[in-house]
Image (cartoon, rainbow over all chains, first blue to last red; front, top):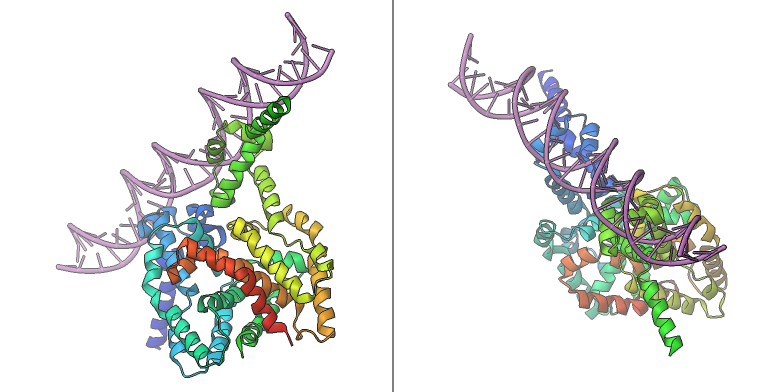
Length: 213
Length: 213
DNA sequence: ATAATAATTAACCAATTGGTTAACAAATGT
DNA sequence: ACATTTGTTAACCAATTGGTTAATTATTAT
């Protein structure tokens, strides 16, 4: 009884926690409108708090944006270090990466465009330092794994960077180009989602088909 | 003599043509900053004209943006109708499409991100009307060509939409993700450009390798 | 030459923007 | 109980923004 009551209160407190409400609203607005297009008043309205609270908790627009951008970019960043060290064969690793990466984007469809766009328009520091900290992990291991399998004669020779580009291009680009794809094909949202679901296996097989000897 | 003088004057007149100067400046600013981030004063300064001239020639910000967006989106839009009707075999058509499309993006590297971003943030009409006019051409013909070659047993079965997505994903995405790729790989601009140059043939062969029987 | 039209300028304007402030309320420690 | 810190509010502010206007200068047609 007491424990139940506690859980409810903690949850209620967390839900009405001003800082958390700001973050939720800021996430929505920044991802929807971008840094330049986002309005502080809009964030305050969605969070249902006074605009001064934004500055009370996060100093200014740029600071608030940086918090949102870091958590968002962190999600987009491929972290498959553990998977690369597993004992799956190379093709199954690709299958796993493609499937879980596309699934992640299905859950966060606006993430790739948001991050890419702000990185291009905002070549400032802060962003860079954050990425460089995570850098060495995945790319290096993937590279090694490719070269290992190339030497073993299991896959055709290819520059690992190109292969990585190809993989993540086919995973992420359709979500970025969604409005254009819808116009060109006349697809509706649900059909589009179905296609993306298909791609979780299709893209991996497309790649494997191409590099297999 | 006279003709020379005429040519020079016409050229000089065209160069100092206010309307053209505005368009050149607007192109730069909109592509660099986006609709929300672009400033009318910034455009006027770069064009070295009075800000009122922007409204004199193009009514308002949205109108000026629409002009720029239309010409820009028109470039990005794949127009390979004639090529699809040529007597090249299917694989050579893919080679030709990939090569010339990547070359076009090399010449206009910020084009894909600009168009995709504005289409996502600005799902208004006007944009649509423009695209729908061009729609039927390429996608339909490409679709037919794929199905024809599938029936002839020359390529493995694949949903044409997925194949089209794969092709243009691998062509365009690396340019969109350039800042991220540079961070992850430590590449410099020139090395990156070399990689993109390689992709003009590499991507086509990657695709053909995957769908060939 | 001169009237009419088109192009250009500087000053101005109202609305919006990010950000601040001072007064007030709620919680917290003692 | 009371003082101190923390959280919240409404009103305000200076700067920036897209857009306008009225006066001025070029250009063009007659």
